[in-house]
Length: 235
Length: 126
Figure (tube, each protein chain N blue to C red):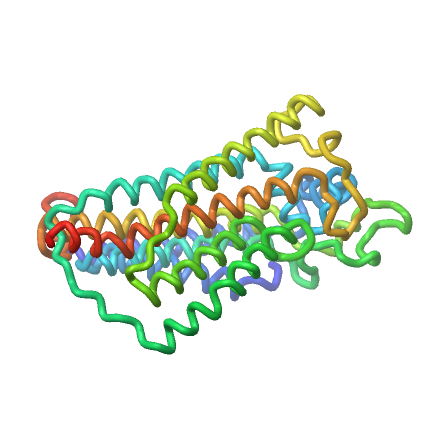
């Protein structure tokens, strides 16, 4: 019976969504988007218009998104921290190839992540993607060596300070140009398509990259070590 | 209609498969996978709704994309809609965080009930 209701509900949902598609598909840019695209370079100087929307036009929204990510990660950390009642499995050690490969690849992966978030205003990429790449390097390191400890104090300091720096950059815009997270008037916009351009956008994106990278790394560390620490408590 | 029905249809199928997983499966891990599928499908749907055929990614790295020589005004008719891409960009990372939160709940539920069967957890699901 429940299966039948599920199928009926899904078919209805699919039908309704498909009916909405012709309404939703645009024939061109809307008036707001038109402004974002046409004046994006004049306003922000960043070649990547997606970045100039994420960090400048919708910068306040991005601050909210970063907060949501922080809440999700701290919720997971809170839930995983209580360790009673979990069975402990002896982790299988990683093979020689994984261990050597992880040691070899960790530095290039972190550098690549940093490259992605430093060039967020010029190329596809930015703070969120670069931070995720950095965290994937950390995951490789943790999978290769289960006993490795990440410097938790350092990670939480990086995370807090970069979040604080994001808000400070917003307040700088408020003081210099009269609106929160404003770009013009805080830093020079620089020359189009150069690394040192787009005013305060690269600064904010590097901060977002550091914040996302350290947050996800701390989460991975917590997940990998949830078992190990209980094991030590048993001994 | 523009030429992006294929992407939209794929996204809708992924969303529906995700909801079907959430409704039908009883293993908590599979339910989490279902939510993850809904998340991916919604992202794909939003991005494909901003796609305009024959236009390119909204990155102005070429002087031909400017409206006039010597001015930084951009020729908007050359680019797809950047707003959905900006929304999805943050949503992907949020999705990772939310999935991690759901998996953490699953770990706790398993520690409490010693089972992954959702029927064992009372009235949390019909």
